[in-house]
Amino acid sequence: MSAQRKAEKRAGSELVKIPRAKYIFITGGVVSSLGKGITSASLALLLKSRGYKVATLKADPYLNVDPGTMNPFQHGEVYVTDDGAETDLDLGHYERFTDISMSKLNNVTSGQIYEQVIENEREGRYLGGTVQVIPHVTDEIIRNICNLAKHPPRPDIVITEVGGTVGDIESLPFFEAFRQFSLRAGRRNVLFIHVTLLPYISAADEVKTKPTQHSVNKLREIGLQPDIIVCRTEVPVDEDVRNKIALFCNVGPKDVIEARTVKTIYQIPLTLEKDGLANSVLKKLRLKDKPVDLSDWGDRVDAIHRPEQEVRLAVCGKYVGLKDAYKSISEAFIHAGAAHRTRVNVDWVEAEDVQKLGPDKIFEGVHGILVPGGFGNRGIEGKIAAVRYAREQGIPYFGICLGLQIAVIEFARNAAGMRTANSTEFRTTKTPVIDLMPGQRNIHRKGGTMRLGSWACHLQRGTKAFEAYGTELIHERHRHRYEFNNRYKERLEEKGMVFAGMNPDTELVEMIELKNHPWFVGCQFHPELKSRLTNPHPLFYRFVEAAVRHAAENGGLGDMVNDGDVSDASSSDGRDKTKKTAEA
Ligand code: GLN
Image (cartoon, rainbow, N blue to C red; front, top):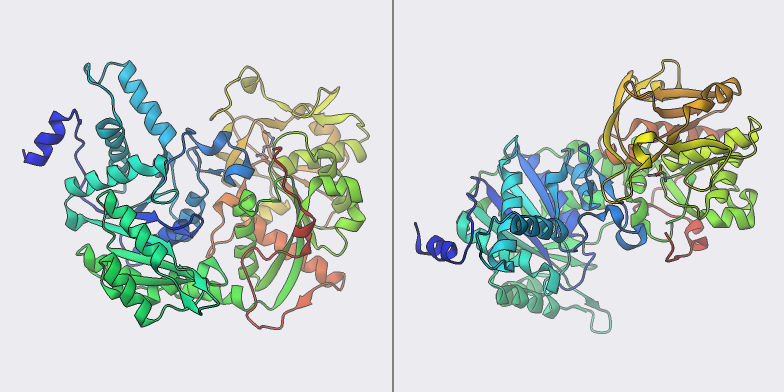
């Protein structure tokens, strides 16, 4: 036993064996929202494209057990995995970039770590010791990294990204755990990448390196020396700046990587590849570099940059004031748009504004309306008015989760004469067309208790759903409590609603559509979670297609002059109508 391990054992550390793999830790400095998630996802893609098995872990320092109980205004979207974990939205980037399905092993929070440590203590597993951040909390963090590294197919490379910024009190145990980890795994098997910001001062026409220097100093204080520094910048980084960062931060000039702001996040892997990030990582980890083919990816990025036409879609929800709340939906539009070489402009419409101003005014000139997932009463009647408008005007409609439930309520009320139709989530009613299933009635705890994760769905032939997927059996991810109430199925069917998708085991309704409408589709699951740049989700693909058709028929299809002026989640003036409120 080495002196190091003896010392750790004396300190009460229960050592976990570090699996053989290479480990990359990605930290952030200077400010938050630097795009660490995109950097991690891009690096994972570059390594995977070279044939390496890669796993990605997001470590979140907050004390919530998972983001499932957080207000979307606080945290943005909750990304749900196949195995039903409610996770950080960075896992969405990991999946979209690498096309590897994530699971609960890919996200850990301080809440989970402390929950486990306290449970161990209550079980008496610490044998009378004093339970401390070092070594007990840090051990638990290390164990989580190892669990992912051991999981089949055993990865060659594990990338761990820690949320927040160096210097945050709550992320300290993670940094300390990474330091210990690098000692145990052997320094040659571990690599640290630090993502920072180079602010541009226009008066001096200079980018400033001082915040990066301070940030690296902060890392050194806790015993971490970055091997590579990724610099977010608005302007090109010249040789002098690189050399300066290299000198003060103790890295090679080639290890200062420029990550200049680009028009679409999907360009970032290409930019990082050009600047030699993957090559440098592999060299430092003593792994072989291999040829890489990113041509499919590049073609899609080109389609984003140079669309041939444009359409306008409206997303009508209640969290529209925060772009991140509907992250996967915006991305799914970009994927579908690229596949159709169409720029999808999105009006983000606050549902309450539809109530106040009326649908004619709000949706004038839009070629498709989407009502996304959501919880609680606020804005519901506005969403119902939006669905009615889409149904009556023959505008393509796509309802996701709550958007399906709203479509059912609207149809029951206005097409099937059930005036009191409602969901019991919003009020008690004589006509609960959307209701809790018996299994949900006695649940009082909020965390992790919804219908979550991947469920099977059987599609009826001859429906738009079947046409989109081209297969009868699909699996999609869920996150909701309420369901369609099968008592009303026949009455709605008589009026022209089609129950296009059913869960084969429980007879729960998963998809609805309308006859006599160009494209009106609702799904109880969240298809946006499974859309990829190189493999857009079939429902988004068809929705955009229907919107293009609608625009062409109504003389509203815009031709593009290709000046390359495109940005992610393009948003037209509808966003300005939105306002941010604290209420969820
Ligand atoms: N609030 C609805 C439910 O719980 C819908 C949830 C959602 O849209 N994700 O069933």
